[in-house]
Image (cartoon, rainbow, N blue to C red; front, side, top):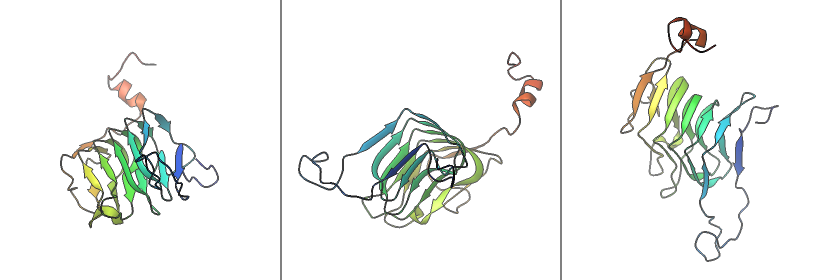
Length: 185
């Protein structure tokens, strides 16, 4: 995270400059190969934006099977970013699940099969909530302080397979005094 601004997070990508590569198809192309960001434990600090900041044109990411703690949101895809998929992740104490910009048809983002323990009650939103470049959203397990949430301004959210739960909001010492995990010190 940029300590001065709170921008970015533990992982930040920018894809502003095209490169000619043979990686994706074996033929010269500016379309890069898919990148994989998986099996990480990220802790956000210093008032950050998100654990994985796919910024400014970032594309072709499969971000999966990660444990990400903190941040304003899970998936961020803006300023020309596209084809960013977040799945099978756990987001702990995140403000919202995703913040997205509209995408071109055939170059959508995806946010699915994730578990969110949220500090807020908006699963996500942005201009990519509708239209031909609509972000793929489904099968989320969402825990909020109230047990309720909105998604793309809809209440209740409309994504198939998504479930909502109320998260316990108390201090650890309160759990111990209530009989939970009595051997912890």
